[in-house]
Image (cartoon, rainbow, N blue to C red; front, side, top):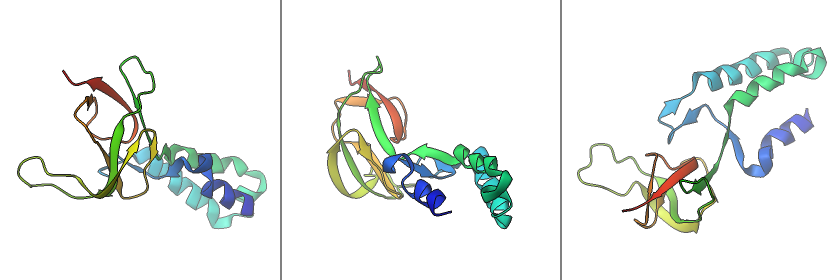
Length: 144
């Protein structure tokens, strides 16, 4: 049981997390929720299931594993180190103009790790992301 706990804590050497949410915690993946609930139900009698003959039920948690890092690529899928600001996410719904979506930020060069509750935004206008949310793997296009 200790090895399972240590494996979950150090999953992917800290680059992976268990979460059913994606897109800045705005959307929930039903498959990930089902995987986590499947593991919880299997752990009701952990000695007979996970630690017994049905150890394969632990693999249901794999549906909720997702990367914590932000890695940027160019359009040819080559790694592209760019400056990003990483800070605490701020809710900007209903605010006029183009308000800042983070506060208390630090500037890093990608790839970077994002903690829970953190958000990233590009530090310069040199590149444009092809996705509205900067998390996981993001393809960038040169700003014309």
